[in-house]
Image (cartoon, rainbow, N blue to C red; front, side, top):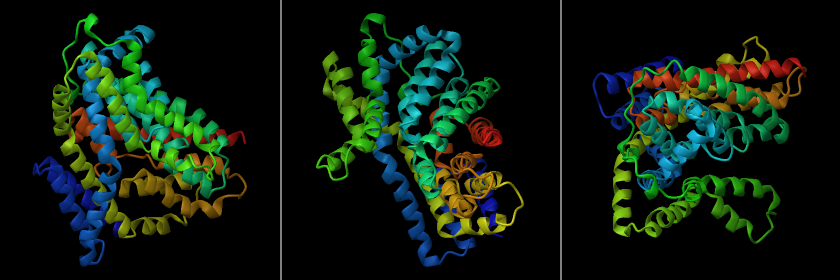
Length: 437
C-alpha cells in the first residue's frame, strides 16, 4: 500500500507542475502534506517533517549554491570561462570537447559532493555551449554523468564511505574497483548516450550568458583556471591531507573549518572577486551588482530543492523505506543483485541516493561474509542502485532541470535515463568483477 501511495504522490506532483502549471515549490509542499496524511504520519507532526526537510536541504546547500552562482557569474563576465573553454578546445580539439569536459568532471567529482561540483562546473559547460553553438544537454551530460558516478561509487563521498564502514570493506580496494567500473560507466552513460540527445533544445540560465570578449581583454589562463577551480583545489587538498592530521592535533579544528564546502566557497569567492574583478579594474559596486543578478537567477532553484527535501523527509519519517525492505527481503537473488534492487526501489520511492544506500546497507549486512559476497563489491552494487532513475522527488533532478532550463519530459529523457544507465552499468561492472574473484 505504501508503494502505491508513493506512486500516486509522484503522479500528483507531475500533474500539478506540468498540467496545472503550479509553481514547483508550492507543488512539492502540497504533495508532501498529502503524502504525509496518506502514509499515516500524525497530523501534528507533518508540518514538522516538511519544515525539517526544507531546512536540512537548504541548510547544507544555500551558501554553496549562492556563493557558487556568484563565482560562476564573475567567471563568466570576466572572460575566464571563455579563456578556459578556448584552452580546452586547443588541448582536446573542438571535436573532443565533450571528452575534455567529462574528464574535468571526473577529476573534480572525486573530492567534491555532487551538488557542489555541479555548481562549479556549470559555467564551463555554458561557456562551451555559447562559444561553439552546441546543444547544451549534448555538451553537458557527459560531465554530469562523471559527477554522478563519482558521487555514488567512490569514497570519500558520504554514502560509499559510510557503506565501507558498515560492511568492514577496504577503502582502497573499494576505490580501485570503483574506478575500474566508473570509467566505462561514464563513457557509456555520458559520452555515448549524449549523442542521442542533440535534438533537445535548452536555453541556459542568463547568468552564464555573456558576449565573447576580445582576446586582449581576457584574464590569463593561469588566473582563469586558478580562480574558477580554487574550490576544487582547496577541497582536494583538504581531502588528501585529512588522514594525516591527528585528531589530537590543535590544528584539527581549524582544518575541519577550512575544509567545509561553504567556507571553501566563500574563501574562493573572495579570491575571485579580487583576481577577476578588482585587480582588473572592475569596481566593487559593479561586481556586487553582478552578484545580485546571480542570486536572483538561482533563488527559485533553491526553493524547489527545498521542496524536494520536504517530500524526501515525509517519506523517510513515514517509515516507507523499512516497508519496502520487508517486501524484498525474501527475494531469491544473488546478494549483490538483491542489494542493488533494494537500493534501486528505495531510491525511486524516496529520491535520496544517500538514504537509499544507507537503508539498503542495513538490510544487506547479514549477507556480508557469505560465500561469493565481497564486501567491497557490495558497497559498489548498492552505490550503483542508489543512483537509479532520478526523477521529481530528487533534488538533483531539479538542479539539472532548472540550470539547463528543460521541461520535465526532456529532463526525464536526458537526466533520468542517464542515471538509469549508470545504475545498470554499475551492476554489470560489479558482477563482471565478481566472476574473477
